[in-house]
Length: 462
Image (cartoon, rainbow, N blue to C red):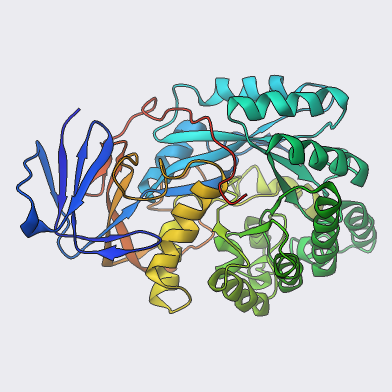
């Protein structure tokens, strides 16, 4: 393992901006010091003059190789983690899925088999509970002890992932005892299914109706219900992919009462809208995800929520399906369009553009993309910061470089970009994962199998 010195850059963490050099040895950060105060030597010197030196991103919500609607997410753990590295993300937390009638352990084993030896960066797992029963509740305790410390439940997708209020309450009660964090897909799936059926019967089959039937009120209602169930159970709650102003208000209201309720949003809700879902010639199918894209006026509530910490994390919910052959399964019936969008490669750049545009500060950029997700899911300070003892997951970022996001140049295994043609300022130049270069001067030098599995601690916000 070589000693590496990163010199001349502005080190940005969630708490500080410092003109210091960073010394890396044995895969860890060992020291930070001003250039004139040390006499360090190293095998490799990276000149970061004029650049930012930031922690590697932590994307706490991805779905590699996920089965959905008769097909699979287009990115494998190999292609997806490579694309993540290109975008400056050095840790993902993906979702292992318990199938109906099977144990959570079987689902976890299946996801380990997919990821093991294939990842370019480090990874952990959450557990999707699709079948809450006495046996799976007991298993939650064992999984927490092993470092699977978060569990996702769905108020949506009846017949697939859906849990009723009784099952949700039981899982929350279990989590309140074992320290686990319940993650919630908060949409009233029972009501949505009625609206889907009615829309299709009336001949409203285009992609834009996906957004119409998944109403803001049904996200807000489910968010409210999830908060109250967590309150009754005495459990913490993390609401995933918050997309609408009324849902933000429910989370804010809970937090003002002092409840341990947290919220995540995603770049697609911050930068895209129902205008995209309404694109002609079935192009809107590219933007079908759940929760859905909302009218543009919801974006300000999300930015405000990020600024004032009503929302703590920006993840991608990366779940890519190719337009050709996958999204097209829903031609003539929007309910058959696989739900999900690509984005694991674009998150840090889009959020840096938000800094340029004045939505958030540089330190808040690092907080919502690196530090907060690491803390939320028991990985901090190993991940999410640049400090002595932390893993040397470090990105040299050029804040002045301009780029145009495009499927022509991205590295995700999908045939379109959700942000096609968008010009952004800022670009990843070099990426270290545990001190080892993965991206070097805009070239991929990593390999499948470098990434290691991360058992996680309990949420550090509790």
